[in-house]
Length: 628
Image (cartoon, rainbow, N blue to C red; front, top):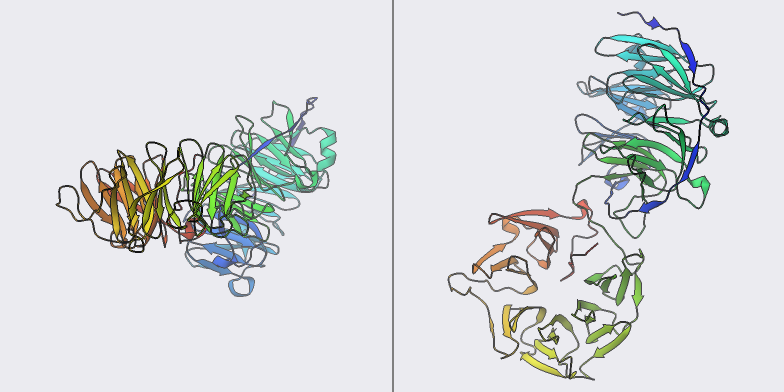
């Protein structure tokens, strides 16, 4: 066994007269990022999170006020003092050592989890004695970022153990009480409760004070200051007791005070700091949510909780952060479990509309997103306004919304006819005041002359002449076929989704027929009750209904089917849309599917509530590509 080596310390105080810069930053509040959540509803032992760590085997360890949790992305294993030899149920520190053992810090000491035995060893002192670390009480222990050293300190010394050399170095502490320690590959950064910061060279043991201006030392003194050193050797100092946040780019530059944007300084309090894989700094606060500070540009981005948007942080009162090897950001909430963000993952952004949760139609213009609801009528959300506003109309159930070439909105309603919304002016067409043959409007399209084609649930297709305001009937099988969504593709060609399949209608000659084969008559288009039709950029006509998804390539005249048997999550298809990457998104009664067409092959990915969407049941025709 190697004997401990005691090193004498030479103190060098850097007496440079500092220039101090104070900066109040402006933050961009971002909601186009998806945070998923883990709470007691998923099996977590407690929602008060103190620490997180994802180990080399991929398990996420979560320390709470009541128990330790190990999560494998599907199930939780819980550990407690009375059943698993933990010193205490309040967990405040977790890390992994060079052998893959998991160290668990509690209010009453440390235990070490051995994967080979599947048990905790509560005799941590015996373990560290083998490393020539002799301390009665471990104040803090951790591996450094490079996994090169195990460091431990008590109220007298800092112990640094080199696993490869099986050697321990010991560094005496200053007279004041140590508050925090950060160890890099070359240096020890120690900050004390008197507000003084020291840098110690690990090899030479040369110790120097990094001067902090007196006016800020007074804010750090007796306030348990914390320290973090980024990968570019930038030094970050903060304390949870007040709003002070200091940054020093390197030893040669001046300190900078960073003030987070807030209307109340008492909420500008940093709990902890972490650096992500892109070199951005995550600042975790008590009541302002999370911030990302970009070192290169100085830009600040803020993430906050929004009760109407389930993809945002679970709360603004945050307590811990861990960024794993894959770049996944794990954030602990005070009383609200874990929020986590996966970079480069598929993102679902959710928006609730107060009491009007049933959104059944969408439309977007240059400045707004329009929502048609079932019971709340028409809602409008400006692009620069997070809150939608209700627009008073004669209808409270808006089945479909379409924008014409003159930027007017046409609303198809249930039992209240057709509405035109033109810059605040509303014109209503019903069976009483116009030639409409019914008041349930399920399909709206604009033809090449700017006239409005209208599909009625009761089996009629009509045309509103914009110039004369007269309504002409193009197709009438009242009570025989239900007419749903319409699709006008030019050259007087209109397709209609009906209760008995796909119908073709020439809007000029009024000739129609139901399509049950391709043009070459060598493939059958199966009959089904259709909810939606869509033509993509490749010229493929997609049809969704009760028996899944059918497609008809209008260029090659080929027909195919996608349903539950070959990858779709459900056979009931309610909505279809194409994104900018030419991917097809399909809404079903059991989630959303994304279809990638590559070299004639359809690759299907299904998403459900576990992936972040609010509900698995997608309303008919309620998918739209937004230009966010």
